[in-house]
Image 1 (cartoon, rainbow, N blue to C red):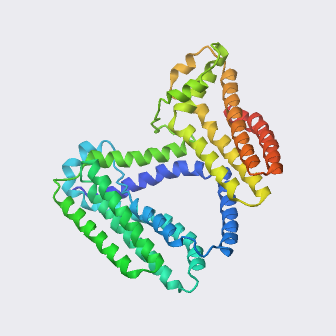
Image 2: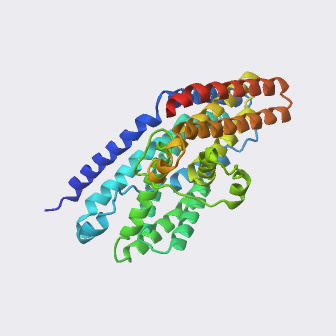
Image 3: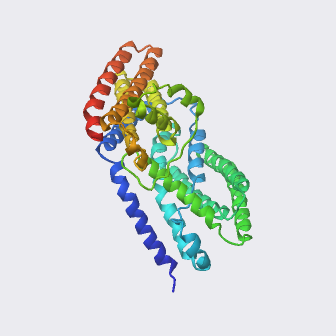
Length: 403
């Protein structure tokens, strides 16, 4: 007899093995050091900022938006696989325990984000409302957990709806109501918080009614959603280790390609062209590169201490360079590259050249940002440290890494 509860435990065990296989590469010594530095620095400046918190700071608005978004994004990890579309659909009536366990698992693993957000907003909450007791904030966090569960259930019910427009409208309505509830709750407007909660309950009951009218589960949609989230994890892991399960996504980006593909038509520039095109068209590398530049620029702009600006600039330069090393293995499954009459040394030099150019560009951007802020000494320091790090990192670490 088919036991869906036992089947979920086996599927979950295999899922944990798959995650642990790559997380040990993600949280290696480099990333652990960077995360520790980030947390320590942000905690210090957060504490300093709270001492001079403006009286009109929109604490309730920010908390409402953040908590509202966190509870609204409540996906259910079903852990389904492609063969399930053939072998499990006939047993759909026996899968209640499986999907109940999937909802419980999804709720538990997403709690850590809520707890981190609650811990981060705690000092801000008490600084903005010093006269309130601590149990009021604990009550607020309890309401956050309740809404998280409600939103997860409604997300699960809406996955029975085929039309994406209906799901998007429902998600938008719930997100706005979630934000309003937590805004009024943090603000202390309990009557308005109760009214918006009542409106959310109406949407909750409506979603339940709609889901019960559906004939059954949309297995293809459940599989698509789950595989999409798993591919996101694979793309992150692929920055640190080879992931054979990754399905690379490509975008054309003609205007960017037309700018960077001016490479001489010569055999020694074969991989210069390939790596440039791969960097531009791949979803992972270009987006990650610009995100790190933007985040690093924000740190440089808002952190008051000059030396900390320089340290953060160098740290983001290091992170970008380290992540881009995986570009060397991006085409590892394409056997045609092995047929190119190009020496391996030329291929390695092409990657080193591209990484040097990208790191130099990031260094120049941070330098220009500091010059625009009037930090001449910081700009000179970042420029000198960035160029020095770029030369040493590419010729010592990267060259050995890809050899």
